[in-house]
Image 1 (tube, one colour):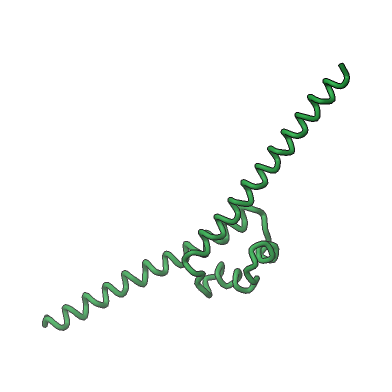
Image 2 (spheres, rainbow, N blue to C red):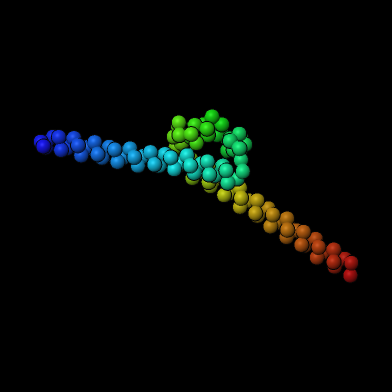
Length: 110
């Protein structure tokens, strides 16, 4: 085997490895986006309205026809987590106010 053939073969193997890795990352992004959507119980339409991402884009990402930018799954996850934390804080504040009101009502009855 000549040196050029060996180098060409090595180049082809590296390209195959890179493409396989690239495809795995792409499929993981699509899977992550779908799992985030489903974990919140959103339909694609509802998720689209919630995130501002067009429905067709979500469909294409989830079906593997298009590739989301690498940062999108993380950004969506951060958005959903932030909203969850805000909701938790709101629930806690409401509970605290309810407890305070209950204590005040008890004091006024005495």
